Length: 231
Image (cartoon, rainbow, N blue to C red):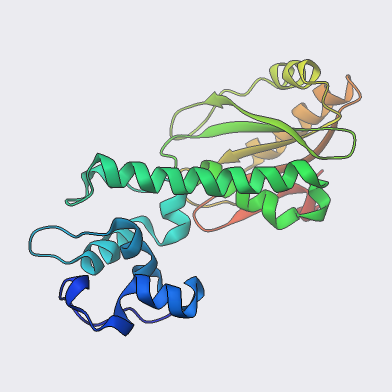
């Protein structure tokens, strides 16, 4: 991570080579620190705090860009982030999700295993309740569709394997990846997760649909059942 500017003055009063927009235009986006990139998006700070201070607070409270894009934290409760800025951040997060989804539609998921994990993290990391999703794939293991199927309490979601199988049949899917989050932030699968995985695999096998993977999303990590040899 690059160091942020030490100045606390308004952006317009900074030396030209320290202004995020000018720095980006001259050296490219990769030359900007995280706080500078977010400051460029936010544009203004709040009374008594410049835009860099506001950007740093947002990054601190969400755990960086990964948490920010995944919706971690309550942006609307941060002083200085009104509906307009929250909407812009949400739009950037959705653009990132759609970009990954497009790549998964154009090539088999095995060509992009990390991108599948990234997509899952963007979809579910930071949720306060447990959410269960299914990603439906065609015969070439390309993305057809994905759907949030079940949402539960902080501890457990009520997942029905037959419903997952029914939705796969509706989409003429040849394979499925299931994904759920652990609101605790710990991605390590539980015994209940393992039992559920086997029940889903059995339900799908009746339709000759393959369960490719079960991903568990935590804070900053995603665990793959396939990589663990649990499928």
